[in-house]
Image (cartoon, one colour):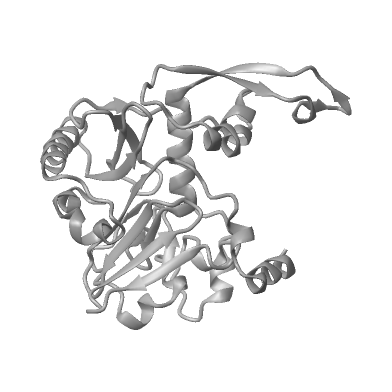
Length: 298
């Protein structure tokens, strides 16, 4: 959510009951302005709010040059003092890759964040998950800091449910991704198609994948992965307001992630309000028709 939209969450995320109070929005808006000026960000965004058992985490990010690869995340518990959120460790670089990636689907799901970034918990890695060269090792206990859990949670949510409308970003010939100043918004007809929305992350598909599935392909705008390739089908809910003024996307995998776009205008954004828990039972909640299509696709 852009900094300028923080004061207007009632019209965007309020459709699902998630809003920021007037006092919070004013403090958040002013603190993000200070954060932008101190770090010389080109743009700064309010990412969302993760609810903790004792305190909540406010997440924001900004970038100086590249809107896709140059994002820097911050977190705060009072909307005033912001701390730098560490980068999630890549699984091929660190010994603790299991903690960051494998445990994210178990520990991060069953235990809620407390609100203390310095809190350290013990993670038990079972025998069947430490199989090396056909030999089972004894269970291991790893230390996991809540600050790292928070960074991993934000990373997973953003990569799997962060979205933008098609054409909102533009890739320059030198490879730098910037906001498209000529973007005028989607039409009502385009907004009804899930393929009109893209993942706000570095692409995971091959560069020619979108070229083969779109007739009106433009490499400067269609270099990101579309949402219609997500599995299973039906993990996104599209709603258009009765006045056909705004389209709202809701992620079923990550309850609390809301994307909004005011049609025929460049105004768009997404915001997350939730506990940082993924709905792992989604494939079993969908109809057998969707499950059959997913099975055939795999």
